[in-house]
Image (cartoon, rainbow, N blue to C red; front, side, top):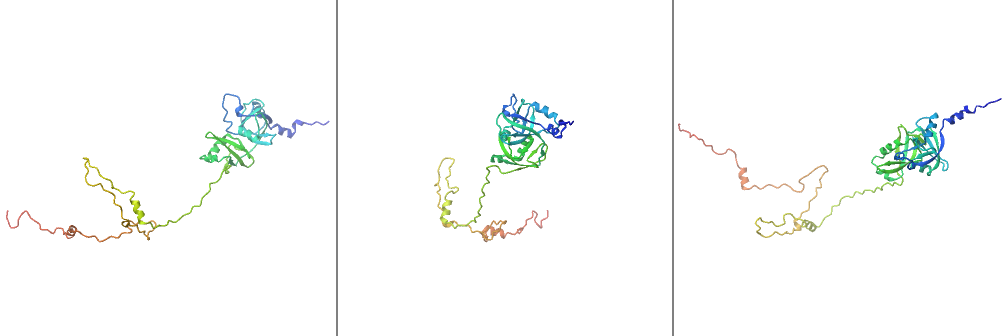
Length: 310
């Protein structure tokens, strides 16, 4: 007689430690209850029924709980974490972006399996719109948004909400595996060029040397006639008019002398007097008399005359 202990087979023990079941999936907006669960849409976690928690507690699984979601009809899969166990039996609630990646409709079947993922060390994202470049610090915004995610899968298009606007980013690459856990990890983040982004064209700058043009002296006269100070008429306080109102006298073009450039000018040197030379000063009569002035050259006087006794 031979007996077979089927329940002690090692493969059967391995299957018992694995959670795998199917649920009808719905978006978070279909979740019944007075509370607003918009926080589920801002992350990468799902809501499962209480029976899943009871079954997971009986299995020897590792924490944190991570799951693989598979749509067998389209062969699409992704990974996620769990937020709460408050859904109705046989139903799970997913973020809208996750249902789009899995090509699932409301009430579609999804396979949920427990998995163990490696800790992420590197990830690369591609914004799906150039509007993401308008954010002042996109890396800090992404780091804050990834706190609501449990894992990343290469090829997924995740959605983050910032400043009342939704930005979509495609996961281009993850290391050390195509699906990684980002819970309590030190991950380097890199960005690829946004979808539809075009670099601005750089126009070559041509440095043209200034050319001195010899202008007609008549043109300078026309320029000076545009504005001339103190050409108006004055008014008296008593209201009387005296004299003849002045009229602007046209300037003779020959009186306008164009400046002569200093060809010996050097950069960093300032020369205040360039085109004029000091001329010998002509002394007037008063100045000539002052120049001949000799100090203390007069005669002194005494209050007491010499030779007289008091």
